[in-house]
Amino acid sequence: MSPKIMSVGSPTDQGQEVRIKALESKIKRLQSENNQLKLQFKLFECGTTNGHFVWKIDSLKRRFTEAKSGVTKALHSAPCFTDKYGYKYCLRLHPDGDGLGARDYLSLYFILMKSEYDNIQTWPFQKKIQLSLINQQDRCNDLVECITPDADSPCFKKPINDMNLPHGLPKFIEIDRLVDEGFVKDDCLFIEIKIEDE
Image (cartoon, rainbow, N blue to C red; front, top):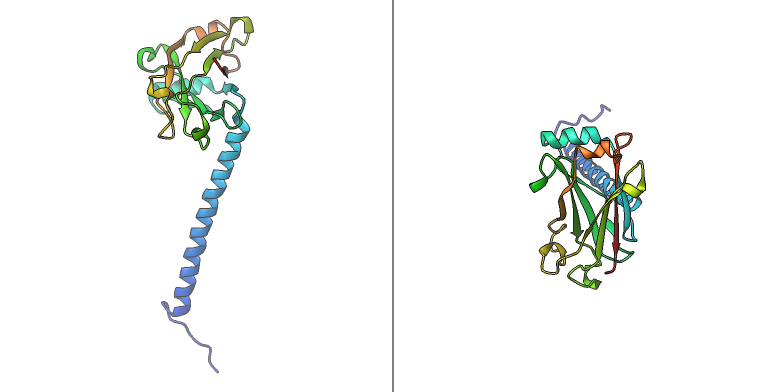
């Protein structure tokens, strides 16, 4: 008895193609889910839930070069919460400045983010925001700025999109002061945020 010869395009080949495509699709979906879980874990690991966060910005020389060339104009911290079920926020840093601070200053902004807990918050956001650039030679010389939320500003209203408009300091510190005054060490700087009730 001679073996059966299947022609290309036979029902068996077509069935295998369908199964292969389904498996490829499933692999892509699982890879995407895996990447999302990795991101969520990283954010959970990096962020805080007590309104106090220290953000380490490393590879500073490279980040300045990328900002000046337009490759990466802004950096965002990991999302954080003011408390376990509180307001969600992040920081945005423009290494080469932004707006009034373009090219000469570091610009630093606070951004409220949309959260699953927004419906149990009081709006507009009214907590005190303290931003500090940590001096790595002497903590007594930290640069400290406070932001008092403006109840009429859209920056502090309940978020409709993933992120509200940023609010902050376009002229946080002159770039020339960073190294000379002890804010940069080993190509890193640290920014601290503390959020407290008024």
